[in-house]
Image (cartoon, rainbow, N blue to C red; front, side):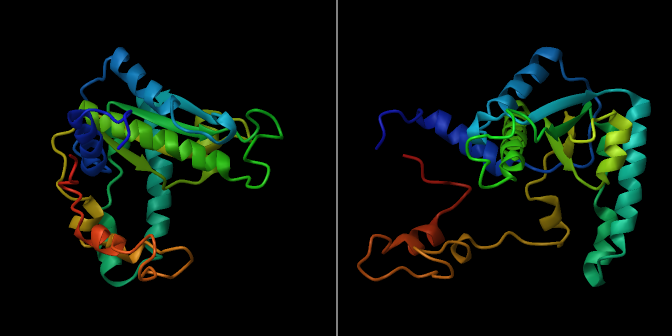
Length: 244
């Protein structure tokens, strides 16, 4: 047991934010977020882990109704183009995936990645050029969890062509927009992820995703260090994570 662990209440709050986070695409009230709170959320995002401490992110805050409408138009265009890919039940369900948050949310934030940040030789990126994307994704997750803790909905919109976003937001050609983040108070948080509720997909059982010592080994060796771990994974309850 670590002496540095948080109090029981603090640990429960962390897990609660994780398990109650939702991708919210509609139902935003439009009520403004005060600047101090928004700054606090951005600080949480900025304190994400980043490979080589590169901090490749920027956050473009968008309030202009005209600019948001332009974003909505290019996202809707891409959404309609993507709809033809799906068949059967998913084709019927696709129209229920909303993008109205781009118009309704209190603020839209474009999160970008600058692959030139910290120069050509960044610790940890030498062998994997995608680590800037991994790092920025950590920032988005931090923002999401902090927003949920504050009671704000957040949706990550990714239906777009990057040149369209670069044009609307006047991004340099090398800047990579990785998400349009819709943020603000909402009328309700669903109990389950929306895509799960509409039957698009279900959360996979964790025990099917955990392997031991090498790929595709779902059962550990008897008497080894992982004996009993599959049962622990199977019996764990995310709604009551068993925090002592």
